[in-house]
Amino acid sequence: MNAHQERVNLIFEKIDTLGLMEKVMKLGNDKILEYIKESGLKGRGGAGFPTYLKWKLAADQKSDMKYVICNADEGEPGTFKDRKILEEQADKVFTGMAICAKVIGAPEGYVYLRGEYNYLVPLLTTKMNTFNEEMQKLGLNFTLYLRSGSGAYICGEETALIESMEGYRGEARNKPPYPVEKGYLGKPTVINNVETLVYCAMIVLNEGGKFKTFGTEISAGSKVFSVSGDADVEGIYELELGMTIQEFVDLFGDGDTKAVQVGGASGFCVPRKKFKETIIGFEGVPTGGSMMLFNSTRSMYHILMNYMEFMQEESCGQCTPCRVGCQQLVKGIQAIKHKKRPASYLDDLVKLAKTMRVASKCGLGQSVANPFISIVENFREEIIY
Ligand code: SF4
Image (tube, rainbow, N blue to C red; front, side):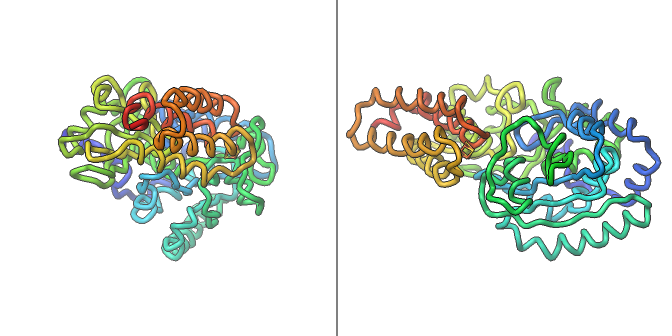
């Protein structure tokens, strides 16, 4: 373990959340926004939108109703950190939501919990009831509710999540309008990831400053990583952003790491020769937290097939580039492997993946190209032979 891991403990640090909310009630909303802005926090779901801006846009909307939603639909393969955060730090997640609610003027908040995490419902319901009573006593007009997710990967996409909450099929909406203007039930809505909300609570607790002392200029702060695969010390770790993959592998690898899949099935595969030059962060490879390590015993063909079959399965089928594209990529690499297509066909598949990146309607289809191209380009022989 290195200094990074010893220094960062913002997510799992025990704090007095009620004391923090008492402090928040005395703070002006502009001051809270200023703390979040100064911190440089970007959403920890992977997309990296500035949290301050999202809150400000929602706060500026004129509406009779607004909502805060915690996206706890953790579905990226290799990610298991939100589950742990909710198990151990639910109060901090709720506090982040309450702070957001105060700033934007939302009387209701929802935790959209991944269906597979339903075992957490009793725990979260108990904690939520206590939290709601505390907020009433503090004079904050804010009530939290829990929603069970629909068990589809696409429901982690914010507009599909809203559709699902409204009782429809989980399908992505066209953007704009963005949820901050027209979200749940057509009202301004802030949707933040579990981890982002905890950081918001910690940033306000520390009055902005401490968070920015971690990370880099572009990727401020720290992040929770779920480490899995051929890792000597798999598990959940909070580290500063800005490390190289090499530093990461030195900490967690088994000494024989040949590739790291950063960001799950929708992320990038980084080969050994690029470990030293690749930064974990928004200036290099952004990630929602999933870090899968593969050693030389692994077949990159099987890994690629695994991701592509997953994407094919989870594609909602709404738009043609993604629905047909996913199937063609799966069939294509199988055909090449079994010599039913020439190796050059791989270049056609790369073009198809690039087309999906620009022509698909939502993040699922757009991101299929990330694992596909990065694995094919760096491990071409393993895909063909
Ligand atoms: S990109 Fe895929 S998941 Fe997204 S809307 Fe199109 S078919 Fe559905």
